[in-house]
Length: 298
Image (cartoon, rainbow, N blue to C red; front, top):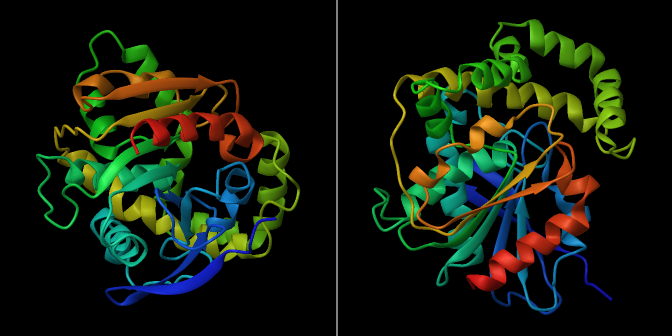
């Protein structure tokens, strides 16, 4: 029988994050931190957590800033990836101050963790993170640097990049002033039900919290996508990386896997016949990949 997770607040600058720790007998090792995407909150991981070996792992989840029970920062600049990295550092310091952790990210959770991983490598520029990450599993969330650098090298992949652009049409829509906010506030139930049905998610995957989580989370796109695309960093990391690509992802295409070996010295790519929310719909298959990756690099 598995014990209920323990919840605790973790302070990151002016923001308090809601953190949950899942294990049978306290913080054992290894520590595995799961970071959710948009427009989810940390309970989106519950189905996957049930498939993980909590008898020998210390599993941690948290609501990112602006989502769930975590604080909502006041300004757009508060959602910049630099602040998200600060949040990750605060959580790591709280839940595993003396040991490296294994990171798993989905969607925007993965996007932000790419910045953590590049700073954690031996060539990383952030001393707070150097040597703090034992492995990284990226699910449906590319590095903003990598996406921008791919777009600067279109030779041989113009059609594929255009196809990806069509799949990510919503990003431009999210940058419009007021309109997406109004759409979410007035139709979040209908949007949530429609997306859940099309993705094979439980009808109650999102509750009434979707309205706030989705509108606040729009700032992730507005604060980062255009800004980061103008000055991408040609990073390289020596953290072992597993990229899981759902082949039926409605938002991300295969082109984003290209040239990843230029970024990662230890890279493994796995494809699953699943949609974007593979962390819920194919939790058992995904858990098998995560367990293998973590155990290999524990």
